Image (cartoon, rainbow, N blue to C red; front, side, top):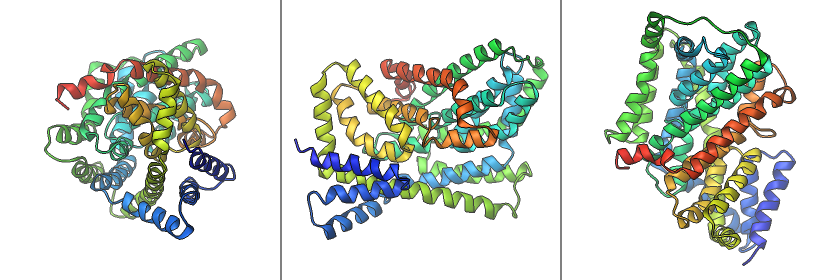
Length: 431
């Protein structure tokens, strides 16, 4: 086994990250350096640049800019306010009511918008001041907001699951979307339990109980927003349209909804389109660079070598899955989710398939792992958004974050070792 390409790849990538090189550039440069081990400079540069271009040549990837745009339209279109009002009538009177509202609102908002950062920004800016006014600590509110925002990346529609489908060689997007529901709801449920216990311990005051009439009214207000989930997921699962076509329908529906709610007008559209374009450009550059690194690793037989090494450690499924989870948790601390999925799927997927795991289940496990990374320093993008919105510091937020991390890790291990939590829904639809 030749260790030189693996060492060059890992060492160069970590060195570039440590000196503050942007992730996309770090991936691209370390890919070129790894290729230089085997071939001359000109073919190495040419191959990596070509692979960046061809890596983006996929119809499935067209869904990502559309879902990003629909997420921006939802964020600006008054949808978050309606979802929070609905969540408030459901759980506002329970211990830690406002924290529970944050979790449920984030699950709904994230599921509809498909963006953890959009969810953290919207929920934090709306609920943060209200929680503070009710006596909740700023740090606790930020911790709940940060962790709950990631649930929308598991509950469909999810851009990350589309990326995983591409990286895995074509795992059904419909199956992945259905598989995400129970793990996403389970994670949200554990976060709510921890938040409720914390609020009880700190003696935060309870909200007033809502009448059936108030619940019904807020549900009707939120129904047009929630109906998007039925259109998008229902259309994909029943085969009426593909994920890419569903993303375009989501844009049209949210645009109409924004105009109906009178939260979006022709003057605000250019800013929304510009923000979406910037986000799309960043994501696509990361995808292109990560696809080139995946190809380089395949060329150098790195996935096969790592797979052989892992299987040589043990043939016990429980031990191997534990090692993979620990590696992914560590990777999530230092790497953004999209490149991590594209780079590590070709490495670990053959291992888990050899152990008898369904690729759909592994996709959810991988995303759950990396969601935890989004909430941890030094690269956690959702952590920085949540802390920024709450106007506090990472150091202060870490104490209330730790029990919430534990809740997410418990959900992760349940999903890892109980396959039916992931596979039951897809099996109902023969996916």
